[in-house]
Image (cartoon, rainbow, N blue to C red; front, side, top):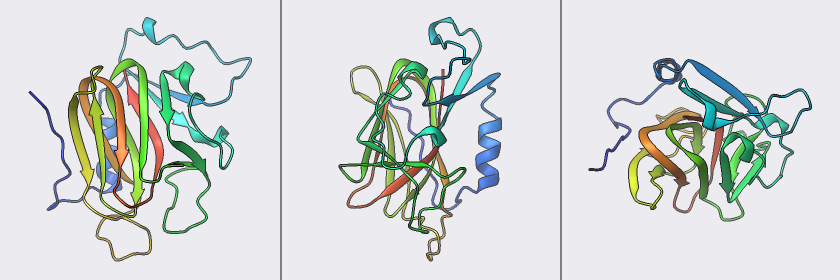
Length: 194
């Protein structure tokens, strides 16, 4: 049985809805994950977690135009086809901070693989086209999908605001993909929960 989450076209999410959704995950512990190692930073061991824990990636330690792959591996996620950018195009505003992720060098695609299965993945997205977030199990079988139904660029006539929250909540997620056909997108506040 495939569980599917979709964005309803008759009710577009707002930032207030996104905050409400994040607050209702019943998460007792959230970690802000840095890309850079610190000598005072505690060692993270996901196998010893006993309470639901979310990890929100702090992208601000990344350099502009840095290829992002294994910077967050110690936090349990590896990226494929991902680039850190500081958007110069005002159509792609950040949600927080200055740095976002985008699919590159292959445009319109970004993948995240988790070292341990997760139960929830979310990010604030801005896209020039319809964007699909898909979650897969260990065998690359589709678990769930959700979609941004169309473009949500800033300063456009889109009814969808920039930085719309896309999220999937289903057990045993081993990887997720963000895909848009013939378009560009950015991700901010990438978050996953164990």
